[in-house]
Amino acid sequence: MKVAVVVFPGSNADWDALHAARDVLGADAKYVFHKERELGPVDAVIVPGGFSYGDYLRCGAIARFSPISDALRAFAERGGPVLGICNGFQILTEMHLLPGALSRNAHLRFECRDVWLKVENHGAWTGAIPTGNVIRLPVAHGEGRYECDPETLTRLEGEGLVALRYVDPTGAPCGETTPNGSVNDIAGIYSARRNVMGLMPHPERASEAILGNADGRGIFESLKQHLEGGKVVAA
Ligand SMILES: NC(=O)CC[C@H](N)C(=O)O
Image (cartoon, rainbow, N blue to C red):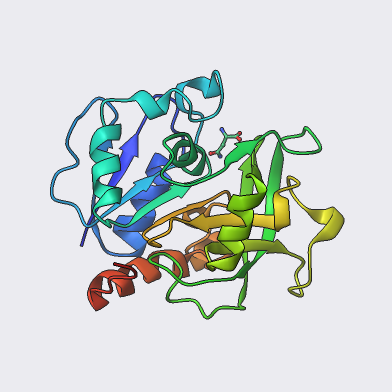
């Protein structure tokens, strides 16, 4: 299993993502620099968290124009599994590989704490976790408020493309404890083919017992299951 981690100027979770893919999942993982134009022969791509290009203009807005983005787009459009974590999610929405946008947290503060998430639907990156399970992962973002137009929201909910939703520790709606004010408490979404997933929380920072939390491991194990099962999630 070969995994590429795309590195932009300002990425800060690239090593964490590489570590999770290589040392936790056991993949042959490598960095691909933003100036490259080819991903090489890879089975999956992770777009990691951070502050690409200093978050100038909007988070992810400049990364979209990086030389690597054409290859990333082609890989995603071929059905290749792509995971965008935090700034990676922001980049994937700016690239229009995922719908909607991440805007400034409703309370206007940077949010850095653990959150609880309900696994709502299966796809390339959640298939190994039973739907309805509640997992705990850390968030660290200033612009994580997921927004989209009403038609898109209806489609995401109706087609089961909401991957993860913020909840309270019991699995009930998070209400006032929302980390960012996302519409419908959406924390992560899938593309129509369910091969591309973006999420604001950081599974790569919570995938080992030594870190005090291994709940994120299921995200990476899901990729393994997806690739080994050779599952084509949608035509
Ligand atoms: N941890 C991250 O990836 C940070 C995401 C983003 N730059 C924000 O602050 O919203």
